[in-house]
Structure formats: C-alpha cells, structure tokens
Amino acid sequence: MAEHFKIVFEGLLRPGVELETARLNLAQLFKTDTTGVDRLFTGKPVTIKRGLTNDDAQRYLAALNDAGVEGRIEPELPVTLSLAEVVDDVAPGSAFDPAASPYAPPRAPVGQDFPAVGELKVFSVQGRIGRLRYLAWSLALVAVGLLVAALCVGILSVSLVAGGLLGTVALVAFVVVSIQIGAQRLHDAGWSAWLLLLNLVPVVGSFFPLLMMAVPGNTGPNRYGPPPPSNTPRVKILAVLWLVVLALVFVAAMMGGIETVQEQVEATTSEYEEALPYDDDATDPEQLTVPVDPADAIDNGDSPGGTDDQ
Image (cartoon, rainbow, N blue to C red; front, side, top):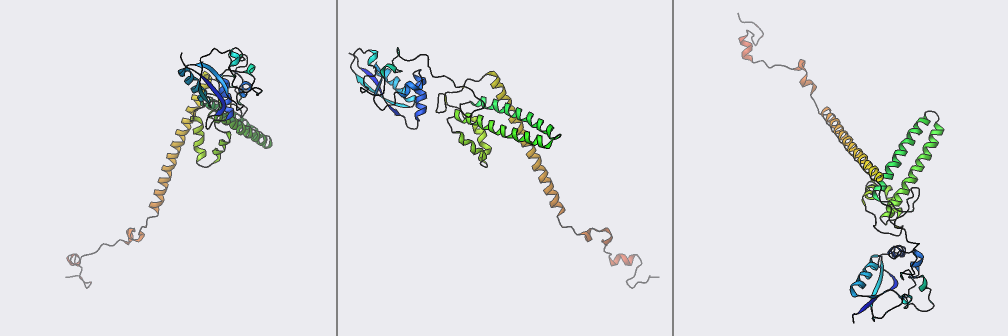
C-alpha cells in the first residue's frame, strides 16, 4: 500500500518574516480572513492536510514556506479520514476551534475572502502604490502646485498678507501630500516611511528620490497590506509624461551647467591675460631709438667732431 503523508504546522515563522506578513500571506493562500488565520498561531501542532503523496506534500510545504511560515511533513497510515478530524492533533480544550478551521474546505467561510488588491487612498500614509502610480500622482501634485503658485503670485500683487497666507498653506499641503504618497511608495517595497527622512541628508537626498522611482514593489501582501490595483491606461500615460518632463529638466540643467562652466573658463582666461606683466616703456613708440652706425654717419658727411668736411 502506498505511503501517505500529512502537513503539520505549529505557528513557526521563517527567519526574517514578521507575524503580520505571515498572517496576510496565509489568509490569501487559504482564501479566508485574518481572524481564522490567527487560530493557527497557538503554538500547538495543527494538521493542515492529510492523505498526501510525497510529491503533493512537498508542494504544500513549499507553498507554506513561500507564505513565510515553517511546516513539516510527517508520515501517516493510509486511513480514510473525516473532515471533522482534520485537526485532531490539537489538544482537547485548546483555543483552536475545528468548526472554524479555514483549512476544511466545506467549512471554510467563502464570503470573507481576503482582498486581492488594496484600496487606493491619496490622502493617507496607509496602503501601497507602485512605481507608475507614484510617478502619475507626482505629476498631478506638481501640476496642482504650479497652478496654486500662480494664483498666489496673482494675489500677492493685490494683498501681501492674503497672498503670503495662501502660499504658506499651499506649501504645507504640498509637503504633506508628498509625504503621504512617498510613504505609500515605500510601503509597496516593504520599507518604512521613516526612510523619507533620507531626502534631508546631503548627497543622499539627491539620489533617494530616484531610488523610490526605481525600486520594485512586493508582488504579494506584505506587512503594510495587499498589493495595489493594476495600473490603468491613464496612470501609464501620466507616468510617461512625468518621465519626459524629468528628462527635459535634466537636459536643461546639464546644458545650463555647461554654459556656466564655459563662461567661468572665459572669465578666468580674460582675467589671467589682463594680469600678465607688460613693459609699457618698451612698447612706447616715442621711447624707441634706432642705433646709428658711425660709418653711416661719416658717409653722410657727419664728422665725429661735429664739423662738416669741405
């Protein structure tokens, strides 16, 4: 008779995996809510699946490992089991309720599936957004910021107090929204939002925004929630436009930097030439004298004594 195996789970996490991440992954794996998953982390052995071949048991164990938890394979006798016995390894009187087990298919709740994607919230530090949505939202934020800045300039021409107050409020709102969408971008990669403080560090702050745009997000749920929704065509178009704008700004900055360097080189060269020493007396035409050969003076009738030859 063929040998059969079972999968046993005792609530152990894989190294480096947090409990919240494991809960979300298991809830998605077994299509249930996190309340049912919490019943598995009692520290007592729970039989998740019985009557498996060795290959099937290995696949089940690999799925658990991918979810961030540790299980084990144990051999069992090839007996026919009732679904009510799926967790008979749990000690009597434990907190685990077999009737609420998310792993007995006929009894698992079907109306409380874990959401496949998260909910989008622009004005929140909770949730996750991908790279393209981050670029699209950044473009929209900058566009609104420019419009509000133009409005503030117009009001300043009429009232300094009103324009200054509106400009201050607009600046604070711009910073707050930037932090919110930046936090969601970092959450998508599984990073803490506190890393936004790196933007204030010299040198590092010049490269960290580029890293935020480039680092990929987690494919599955992480401790900050489920993955974000897929990108719509509008999001993709706005993301491409923002990349084009950033490329043009970069090229313009490079051209301006090159022109500035050329101007500085020309100014330095001119100052150097002006600072070179010149002998003004030697270059004055009135001070120049031509030496006269005495033989030429005699041929011309001029005697050394100052008298003419008769």
